[in-house]
Amino acid sequence: MRKKLVVGNWKMHGSRASNAALLSGLREAGPWNADVAVCVPFPYITETALALTGQAMSFGAQDCSAHEQGAYTGEVSAAMLADVGCRYVIVGHSERRAFHHESDQLVADKAKAALAHGVTPIVCVGETRAEREAGQTEAVVKRQLAAVIHTLTHCIGEIVLAYEPVWAIGTGLTASPEEAQAVHAVLRMQLHAATQKSDAMRILYGGSVKPDNAVSLFGQADIDGGLIGGAALKAADFSAICRAAG
Ligand code: PEP
Image 1 (cartoon, rainbow, N blue to C red):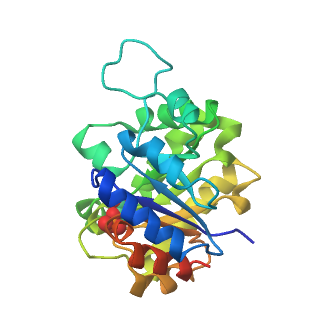
Image 2: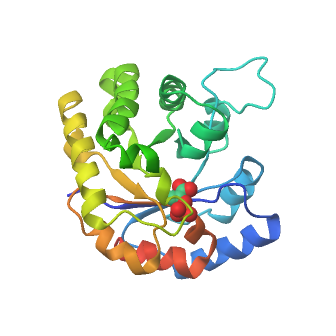
Image 3: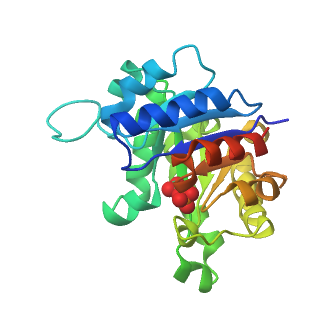
């Protein structure tokens, strides 16, 4: 039985004051039966770590460099994330693939850098609306995952995978539980062919998860929790989603 995982992706939102209020709301609402984490903007990682001292909740970042160290102005290495205590890092979010032209291979290299430093990469895959309408959903997510499998080889079992249909992110549109489950089953089979650990691996769903759709999504056989954007910014909504996973 896989324990559910719910991860909040704060994206480029927040301030010291609003983060403190949000984390205090979450501290009061928890703990939950699911594993819970928040992935926060880089400048707020250390304060988040302090605010979560003694709490069951983990924290992480939203990106990392594929490089080990050096002259890469503006980048943050996986070693640095490990140094400040990050448990997770999101890699390959569709916003980075789209706005920063990140390739499947770069995403895989970032996942490898994270694992090398003991930070669990949450690898995002997902199709655009045009790709879904063209019947390419399966081919796209399999191609994105294949690059990670090829790069990580026997370590693939250490990642968390997140299926995030691009057309559902921040749009209020959600894949139906059946649509999401169908893709999750395809991804699990692909993992199964690559590692004996596939049954223990967590595949999260992301894309407009809200308190009112979380139970039906998380009830699907291969959906092991959620990657939550907008709803992660309100303590009441995020904690209701965490409860739905418990
Ligand atoms: C996300 O950004 O990973 C996400 C799933 O966003 P939202 O929940 O707002 O669709």
